[in-house]
Image (tube, rainbow over all chains, first blue to last red):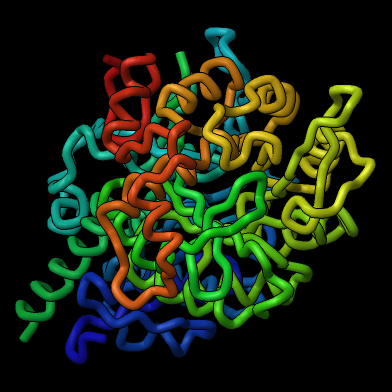
Length: 229
Length: 288
């Protein structure tokens, strides 16, 4: 564990691969703190919102743990919030998984199911979609110092690990930084609004390419810390 | 045109060791699983699959330790199975660092475990593992207890039922082909892959990289688990210091008669053979 690395909250609502995320944070020189209550957000430099499982259950738990308002507040403060997989989807306004549920509403838009048949009539698409996919950058990754740090070292050939049955569709297309393919269907895999960022892929499970997302976060936080001293 | 296919390394574990058998029995020690896992990770494997081959004999702790060590240094998905009997067991293995769990025997005895686990941990976390053996009437039955116990369950029906209960993937092992190097049972794989709506992982039989291409193109496998084909290649390079070796296994690894049917290859060689067959995989975006 790095003694002086930036402290990063990993929201623990009992759903998600917290161990892997913690390991990736440590690898990249940060100090993970599993957070179950609002007080855990005091004096952390960034928040990671993980998630594996169902949207309604995740939101129910975030409400029960009184984390919804504090997460919105944290996001509005401008400190980084990184939503991963289901965590990215929770950033949106609503999801249609098991009926309509409200999300955190930090990035306007909705969460919808992936299609199961390709338009080209080829073999049926499986759900959950599981596998390594190339990320197609469709907008400027250098729009902020944070997105530059997180994403600019990735090449067009880098593939990331995805596992999901639903996808996020932001209302404002300018919030979409990258797309991936599910058969003929393209959907957003990187979205951002200010310093609130969502990645549909698992950066802690995508080998060295994925770890660059964590290393980028670490670099950015260290620079911010030096700048504020 | 195929979606990009996953190729994963399957490591069968007994106590602290990586083992390999034929038809899921006759296990030989090859070395430490963590060591092989690290090598596979550095050589770009897509995922790792740990199956505890004799779960009941050694208890849980040894496997959890291996999982903990592996997950602290490899950053690709790790699926763990073998002897997981309850929500409690699943939670413990996930906490130790596994991303997914594979359940067979417990799911057959109580399919409700699948739905409870899927509700608790997410469908995509729960892989139902099916060990299939062909019967005299040419149908396939599912076997439990790492291939030792027969059931009356027909594989296709059981696979469908497992998905209805919430399985996120099906891991399909051919007991007849496993460890033989004679190729996959592509008909078996296709019959399941074409029926279920979740990804199907084919396991058992790869002797040459072309076998992997066949089970993808003809068997419609979404992912392929490879054991002998890679272990025998990497074991020659990785002769572990201090592992529980005996002379017989060293001779075996140095290329005894048993390896005749195998053409052990590296991960990158595997990927280039797949590319030659028009199959995309990680690191290979263009078909050759």
